[in-house]
Amino acid sequence: MLAKIISLLTRGDGNSYRSFYSATGFRMWKDLMSHYSDLKADKKRMEHFSTLCVVLFEFLRDISLPNTVELMGIYGRMVINSFTILDTDMNSIGTGVYLASSIVDHSCNPNAVATFDGKTINLRALTDLPCLDWDQIRISYIDLMYTPYERQTDLLENYYFLCQCERCLDETHIRTVHAAKCLNLECKNTVNIPWKGYPLVRKDSKHENGGSVNGDSVNRDGVNGDIVNGENGVEDLADDIRCDECGTKFTENRVKDFQRAMDITEVHLKVMKDAAVAYVDICQYCLSRQGALHPLNVLRAQTLDHAFDALVLVRLWERARDIAELLLPCFRFYYGERHPLLGILHLKYGKILLYQMDMPKALEHFKSAEKILKITHGDKHPLYREQLMPIMRQAMLESSS
Image (cartoon, rainbow, N blue to C red):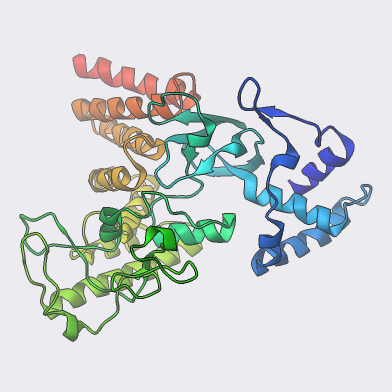
């Protein structure tokens, strides 16, 4: 990709090319930010850049390479402004730089989404907008099914900014991501139990009451630092942990059960991530140990996501159906009511139900998928036109016969 960009800039009209996002508004290559100083301080990216330079020298023997400063500027513009190209299942199949679309900023609570038809990018609004103001449009640069701190870290490392959107700072979201469920089965409240001292969110000074020093964040006790999930001894905390809603108290053993479940899940999720594959047995084992976790706990949600993909892959439809029921509220919580991943989950779940001849319920999920995908992809997109609508019509015909 870097070689293609260099070729365009040196041989073609790459420097003068205009990509329009409105009738009069456009972006050119020079308008993209290179983040030169951030790159210089980024050891990992500098190692990658140095390796690329060696490869480029061998690969582009017939092309005179720009000097190091110019080359680093090109590299910076590429890595900061590139989009991951997705297939109809939202899986990564490539990378591209789209000049006009690069004008859109990030939010963990986006009001627009980028979808692809082949290599063509489409930006579509998820909410009604009073007018087309590109300064107000936001998409998500990253996967949203993580804690606010993990999302912020990802954005800092890859895009060099600290996200302080309303989603990252939302107290309900912060309380839920590592929550236990209440021991009172009638209570749906989240209960926060300390676990490993992992940070949950990072706040800059302007978002803290009373301010802070040098932009450091402030935790719940007012001490400079990140808001964390504490790591005090279980014996010291057991007497203090109870549900804020119903007052149900947690015993020492219940606290340990929660912490062990989190430990086990964290280890196995990392194994599956490193292997780039989900294992049915591992997911099932983790889920069997997660009785203490809140249904929307992010580690549980990630486990359910892996489990569903693994079960579909090996065609264990009945178990996949059970997992889909648990996964749907997680997707709504982390991705929102109008996200393509939620629409695709409804579509996949509907296919399973159709295979099992549960026509009314299949049609229900196809209709839910249709409402979302018509917004996120449009009625001319192959996913909507060629995959969803034919199978939805089939379900309608079979349910009426």
